Image (tube, rainbow, N blue to C red; front, side, top):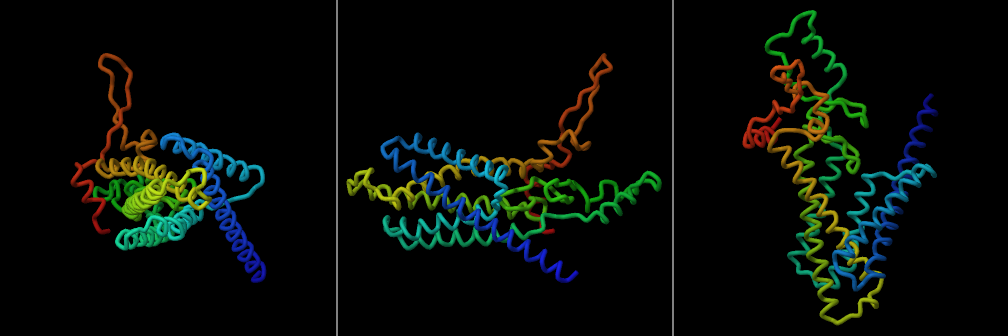
Length: 315
């Protein structure tokens, strides 16, 4: 039995290492693939290059999914995120910082931002989003059982308020917002603030990288360098800049949505699936008819200031 358990642990470890290796290869392949955009379309307008880069990314992601379905080759989404961070930081150190003569202040700022998002990324990977045990849920239901009557102080038990089920994790999560594949974890009550802070960290680091990359491109322009003569390293600097801009665009929209959720005290899962949760349903009868309609209401909205205060409250 002991030898069997050791064999299973070794097999799981090898499988995990395999996922990491595949993820690393996928990131390197993707980054060099998108570097072909500035290589073959050097004189195209910025918007055209950005659009072409997005199309290349879609093709690469589609190829990755095809490999997963057909060849059973799996990558790890969190590992892809980590290796992308590492790749862009490497391009910054090896190419951007040298070619753009980045000031010491900006250099320290960017390296600090990278360190912060790596630490935050590791924390959210390992964080408990607010898991509620099945035993605890059953105990709470017994208290509220109709056989014994609902105790006035326990109706809508605060300890299990807004507990939702995550199909990916097969777990009940308090304050469940969504399951984030990029972080390999649920986003719930316990790590929601960390999630938003990490989004801000990614946006600030990517914005700093874009600023440094623009300095690199301007230096090339000042030197009257022919775009067709730029080597692979120069193309990588430009493509990673475009990649960071795409990241800023979608992450900016994502952050805006979550700030809206904070202000109105609602979770993404609740907004999408509100018809599943009775507390969000307001049943109204049509005057003069037997028909009724169900409208959305948010019973948790206490006003912007109180909602933000509730989120930031120390639990």
